[in-house]
Length: 98
Length: 371
Image 1 (tube, each protein chain N blue to C red):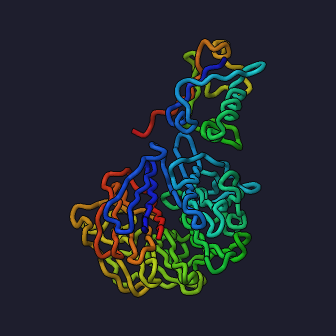
Image 2 (image 1 turned 60 degrees about the vertical axis):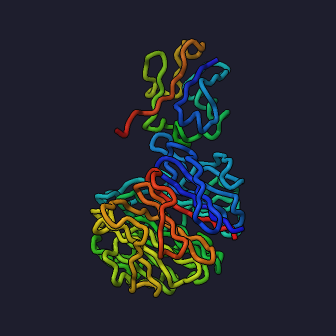
Image 3 (image 1 turned 30 degrees about the vertical axis):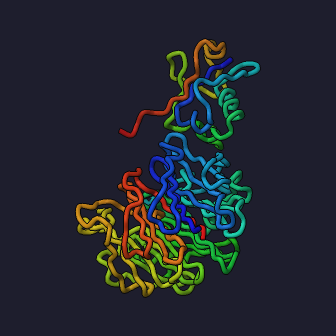
C-alpha cells in the first residue's frame, strides 16, 4: 500500500482526512501514482499537474524519503520504501506569499 | 415573501448573504472554499438554485464548482479549458509574442434559458462554453481566432475576458470584453466575432483610436434595452446606442472617470452607477471619500451618493465584477471593496450600510432576487 499525504487544500477538495493509501499493480512510478490519485479523486485533476502537458504545477513539490522527487521522470520508479509503504509520498505546496 | 441572496467571491473564499425583501437583517454564510480565490460566483436565471463558482489558486490552479441547491452543497465539475487547435501567441507587455496559456476563470455567465449551459471568460483571454453543467468545456475559438488576436496585450491584471453579456432579445448575440483588447460582439451565438470599439480613445496606446487594444474594464446593459451599452473603460465612461457599433463618452461631471464597475438600475434603463477611482496609478477613491456616482440620464450628469459610506480616510478599491443590483420594486444596489466591506443600498443608492465589514478582499458580487 503506497501512502500519500496531500496538502490541506487538496484534502478539503477531495473530501478526505489524513493519509491516503493506494495499491498499484506492477512497478510503481510517480506518474502511475498520480494517475491513481486522480482516478479515485477526479476533482484533483489539474490541481497537481497540468491536465494537458502533465507537467507538475510550479508551486507544488513531491518529496519522499528525505529527497525531492519533483524533477524525477514520471516513468521513474518510486523509492522502494515508498512502494513498500514504509515511507509516505508527500505532495507539498510551496510556502510563499510572505 | 421576497428574498435576496448576494453571492460574494473574495480572495479567500466565497460567502452567501441572504435577507428578506426588507434587506435590513442579513445572514452571512461562509467561507465556502476557504483559502481559495473565488473570482466569480453566479446563479442560473433559469434555475436560481443552480450556482457556478470559479475557484482558483496559485498553487493548485483552477477548479469549477457547481451547486444544485442554492449553495448548500457543491461538487467540483470540469476544470479542463483546452484552447482550440494550436494556441498561438498574443503580445506580452513589452510587445513581444507570448504563447496563450490558460490561467484562471474570471467570469461565469449561465445562459438565460438552460441551467446546464454556461459560459466562462478566462485568462489568457478566451471564451468557453459548457452544455453539460460545467463537466466539459469547449472554446468558442472564433473570438481568439479573430485576426486581431496576435495583437492583444494584457492589462495590469492579466489578459482576462471578464465581461459576458447575453442579449435576452436576440439569442445569438453575445457581448464580451477583454483587458486590454477591448469589446467584441458575436451575432451568431459565438461563432464569429467583431471588435466593437469605434469611438473609444485610449491615449496610452500607439493609436488612441485603434480597432483593438483598449482596456475595457466593464460593460453593462439593461435587459429591456440590449442595444444600449454602458462601459467603464480604463479612463472614460462610454455609451453605445447601437449595440457597440459606435461609442460616445458620457463621463460628464464625474470627479474622475477612472474606475472598474458599472451597473444599471433594475427598472430604470437610463439610471447607471459607477465608483470613481482616483487614477490608474492610485487605485482608491478621490479625497479618501467612498462615493458611488449615479446618473439618471444615461450618463453625463452624475450625482454623488455618499450617505452611509465612509467619507474620510477610505482607500479601498471596488473591482470590476464587484457591483450588482437586485430587482425588487425599490432597486437594491450592492458593491464589495478590496477592504472586505460589502455595502448595500435598499433605495437605489440614496442610503448605504455595510452588510458585513471584514471579509477578505471582494472580487465579485452577484445578486439573486426571489420575488
